[in-house]
Amino acid sequence: MMTLSQLVLASHNAGKLKELQALLGNAVRVRSVGEFSDVAPEETGLSFVENAILKARHAARLSGLPALADDSGLAVDALGGAPGIHSARYAGGGGDAANNAKLLEALREVPDAERGARFVCALALVRHAEDPLPIICEGLWQGRILHAPRGTEGFGYDPLFWVPERGCSSAELASAEKNRLSHRARAMLQLRQRLGLA
Ligand SMILES: O=c1nc[nH]c2c1ncn2[C@H]1C[C@H](O)[C@@H](COP(=O)(O)OP(=O)(O)OP(=O)(O)O)O1
Ligand SMILES: [Mg+2]
Image (cartoon, rainbow, N blue to C red; front, side, top):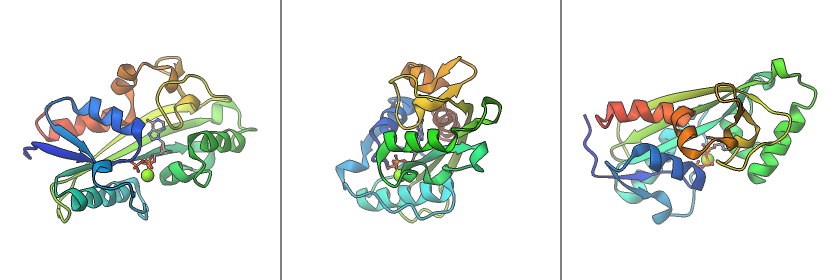
């Protein structure tokens, strides 16, 4: 088991940082990579796992502390799994609103029965920048893509993601509820178990 007194969260996404912090609880003192650098590393991996490791190593190198990274995204069946690892850059850097608009447009003609999608989260924890055995945890969240945005909570694609088990979009869920159901919640539960925190 790894004992952690401090941990750097290797994300520049405010919505994600808030969720990761809440999900970790207060057993670990958390810092953010933003304290050390404003520059995000290039996400050149071919998988969520590779990108999570790359971001975690980068933050560990900058901070000299153990680092936890989250690489996540939305995989849409009708788009062959896109935007996938490219979710954050789907509309070429225009941010969440542009990404959501592009997704709605790509699915304009697609009927409800074919609008299945899942959120994917890979977490990577490294003890130091060259850790040869990162801890990897994964989580999935199955849903469907709406025809128009709903709700104002959360971030990213939440307004377009229909949560069948709750009958609303993920942007209509209170944060505590999203943190019980989400891909990130599932991956984080595994991680907490691996670390002996759950
Ligand atoms: O719970 C979620 N609810 C809605 N959207 C979400 C969620 N989880 C991931 N997403 C979307 C946001 C972004 O379009 C992409 C993550 O991209 P990803 O590279 O992992 O994160 P990022 O660039 O925003 O921040 P960073 O890399 O600094 O952690 O998937
Ligand atoms: Mg990113």
